[in-house]
Image (cartoon, rainbow, N blue to C red; front, side, top):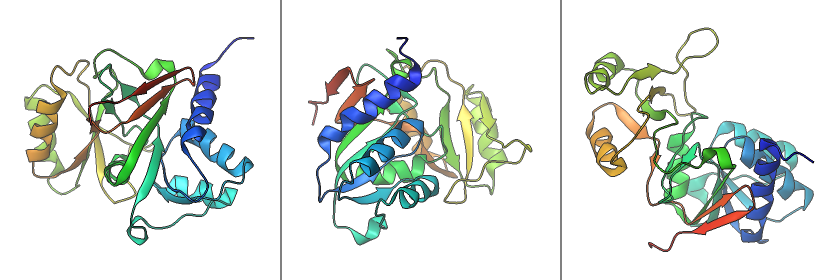
Amino acid sequence: MTITQENFKQKAAFAALDYIKDGMVVGLGTGSTVAYLLDALSDKKMDIIGVTTSKDTSKKCRALGIRVVDIDTVDHIDVTVDGADEVDSYMNGIKGGGAALLMEKIVAKNSNTNIWIVDESKVHSVLGTFPLPVEIIPYGSGKLFQKFEDKGYQPVLRVDNYNNPIVTDTGHHIVDLHLNYIDNPQELADYLERQVGVVEHGLFLNIADVVIVGGEQIKINTRR
């Protein structure tokens, strides 16, 4: 039988179930790989409290009967399971392809353990193949866009099918930086965080504790 990309996503999601126990507060990410996890949690009727990273995930959870609460109503998050758009050999990642990077990072930073579930196509030795999402406020965005162009970042405003700017769940726009190769992710993250008008960026550095690749390979972060 031919193993497809969807099979790898499903295997990764099923492998993440080993880290989730009844009674846990679980951060639930956004994207197609996490969708398999939500289905599995529902099928197993696991007794968890979900903290979601997007309106889309909240909607799916409610449809599946998974309890969802606001992040500010819990005193901790035991584990968060999320996807990633790209992961490097140091377990750093790029996220935000689904325009949920701000909420994803808030949930991740407030979690005891972060698990990323990906298929093999998302793993690269160096970050940058996937365009880096940057969440920005609409006001003055043209000035910020020009700064990115001057830096050679090849920014592209993310738009919908009607050529209107994508608006995130928190009311912002997304600019995708087409970098191809990120030599120093921390230096770039520091630069982006200093720019007025940048709300958040899609570099997730030293956040993942476990990366599950297609259910076959598990990498554990021992740096923390």
